[in-house]
Amino acid sequence: MSDSRTKNATRNIAFGFLHKIVLLFLPFVIRSLILNLLGANYLGIGTIFSSILDFLSLTELGAGSAIIYSLYKPVAEKDTERICQLLNFYKNIYRFIGFLVLGIGTAILPFITVLMDGEAPPEINVYILYYIYLIRSVVGYFFFAYKRSLLTVHQRTDVISVFSTITVLIVQLGQVFLLYFFKNFYVYAAVPIVGALLSNLVVAFVTKKKYPMYVAKGTLDKATKREIFSKMAGLFGSKLNSVVVNSSDAVVLSAFCGLSITGIYGNYHHIMVSVCGFVMIFFHSMTAGIGNKIVTDTLEENYTLFKKLSFVNFWIVGLGSVAFLCLYEPFMKLWMGEKMLLGLPFVICMVLYFFCFEIQRTIFAFKEAAGIWQKDKLRPFVSMGINIVGNLVLVNVFGVSGVVIATMLCYLLTLPWLNNTLFKSVFTHVKPSENLFRILKYFIVTAIACVATYLPTMLLGDSFLDFCLRVLMCLVIPNIIFAIIFFRSPEFEYFKAQMKSIVKKFVKKH
Image (cartoon, rainbow, N blue to C red; front, side, top):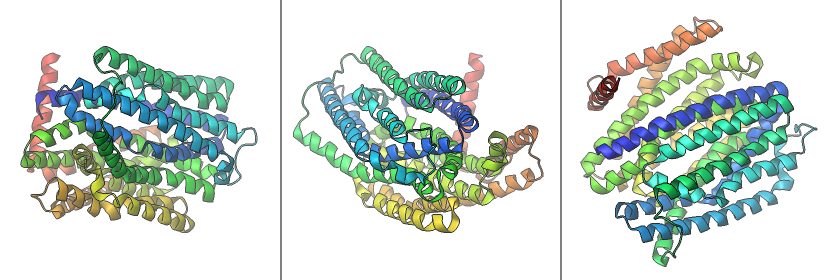
């Protein structure tokens, strides 16, 4: 990468991590308060409503990604008129989506109690509460959400992260205050509406200051509209698959196992989603730079970058897998107590789920940057089918673990297809099997690290000190194993050199 791309990516990653740290820790306080003040059923209600509205977000149809991709070229060429036309098109699309989500959400209002297995708290009107969640999900479509694309395409997602972090702090601290002193779940649920408005207004103000020449006006030509709609059609399957796979677990659990189990599952899932968010920051911050490299650099240079990023992704995912296996249950016991545990078999399923999903991150990043969503448009539908059928069958066999197994299988079974799409479309000079064998090698090494770290942690107790020792083991043992195995690899040498460079710069400044 060029210095400017590296600088932008580093800055975006740093502020993205700060934002995710806030998103990771404050919800622990909130979920603890809800459990202790209101009960596990309220946790379940929040989980199931969020999952239902994730389904409604399908109406976005990938418009954001398609238009951001369309902005790369005019931004590089400083074509202001074209950028303004795209922004105007984006604004109108988002307004249409907002009304569509509101309409569909209202239409399914009478049926939401069917998904709660009769466990809704009697003091709550679930219809009013659901509508509050619905307004939360649509308010952003009407207030300048489209302007975030300018910051993304200019590789300034750090700006979004900074203001989102401030907004989240205000919103979630407000939720903590209201829950503790008023114990009113309606008000708690409504506070994020204000946060969404505030965040979008701030982004709109910042983009107006930084890019005053870009105003949503003008009419996009029909050919470009057709191209964008074509890309949206290609993205729809991926979007649908992502939402169905990530949200159907909670919906199926609520219908088959009840709100209490859904709430407990939601605690585990929140931790996993938060960790996945950290991995996503790394690739989301670099997507614009990757897209630029695909256009400007040679095929060999891009494949070298792919291997390096795959290695970094493996290292992060490997550490995460070890940490989940060794820390999930001890942390849940300290946080929520013995009664909120789901057992080691469930944890192993979650570790496999995490690895199978996150190890694909590099492939997804290059596929998105290359804009080849339509190349495997049937794959997401196959993945969805595996997940839905698997959920309905396996939840009756394995209970809560069944939905996690189904999700893991849908990612695992469609990985070769996804991998083949990227290599047949972008890295045409390399056999797709080369990357599959690389992923298999990473899985075996991760499994070795998991076993080698888990066995000594079994000797520890349940105190906070023992938990800290577990954390230390998870940081030391797998890193030593990874370093020994990959010490001579070019990818390891490259990133070792990069880390030395960062440390030297830090020492000079301080």
